[in-house]
Amino acid sequence: MTTEEAEKTTTAVPTETNTPAPPPPANKGRNKAFLIFFVVLILAAIGGVLYWLHARQFEETDDAEIDAHLNAVSPRIDGTITKVYVDDNQYVKVGQPLVDLDPSDLQVSLDQAKAQLLQARSMVSAQQPNIPITQVENSTSISTAESDVTTAEAGQAAAERDQESAEAKLAESEANLARAQSDLERYKLLIAKEEVSQQEFDQVATTAKAMAATVAANRAALQSSARIVDQRRSQTAAAVSRLSQAKRNGPSQLLIRRATVQSEQASAETAQTQVEQAQLKLSYTKITAPVDGIVMKRSAEIGSHVAAGQQLMTIAQVDDVWVTANFKETQLQNIRPKQSVTIHVDATKQDLEGYVDTIGGSTGAISSVLPPENATGNYVKVVQRIPVRIRFKKDQKGLDRLRPGMSVEPEVRIGA
Image (cartoon, rainbow, N blue to C red; front, side, top):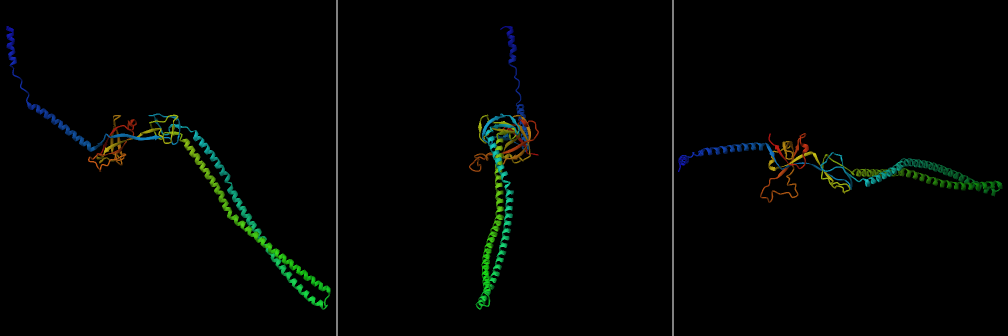
């Protein structure tokens, strides 16, 4: 071993035999762990208190989405599409043209209905003058019948006076005949005694014969007058009957004329209704937007034949949207209409302000096809959800970007 090696060995031995550093005390590590645990515990307590304070002031859910009215556009008549003016995702205004249907057949129907209306109106014009004409005819008939009655009564009165005159003449002639016959009987006695001449007797006999002839003539005249009186009475009765008939039939004839005019007017009104119906159907060939909104699900194509009620497209009213939030039934204890709501929109990463509008009339499950019956046969009680409608406050930035179906997270302030 050389001197240098001996020196290295000599200097290395003290290095290997140095005393190791004492380990850190165990109490220091425990104190650090306790400090961390205490800080975490304080933070958890603070977090719990904050959450408790927040839960007292707010109710929130992530089961919520934006809803809007989705208006189905469909034709009211059958037809063939000739024009389509819009496409999907296009914004339209109310009254804006959407689809045109072929109007040819409906135009022909309208022209036919107009022709029938003209014919019905001409029939009304032709029948209306019959009412005043019938009134004049009835008045004339009554006046004529009254005049005939007056004439017949006058004739009857004259005939009765002639009969009375004939009766008087007959009575006079009979009296003269009786006197002449009495003179004849006396002269027969006188001529038998030859107290009178034959000439005087013949004159008395001739006078008696003449009186008998006069009686016969007056009797015949009386019989003729009686027949004339009967005839005049019959004429008077006939005239009275015609007058009664004219008075009785006049109003009926007028009613018939008026009923005829009313019938023609009803036909004209029916024709007018048919014209309006044809015009209405023709207007249905122009399908316009019923509301403002965005077109979606367009299925209308040119040349397609569509039936009445067949859906051609849907218009989403994006100008009137709301939030449907399905809160648990246990969350509804303090939720009331008009409460303020903060709505976080996932799509825009934006918070919007709103308010509770209405609370649903039933749970979502109860309105399904096969609603559950929690009160029978269930061993696990299921917490139900009730839809709450939340409206956005107006004039907020970002409302125009909202679309139906977007996910949102509403937070209802239930505290003061």
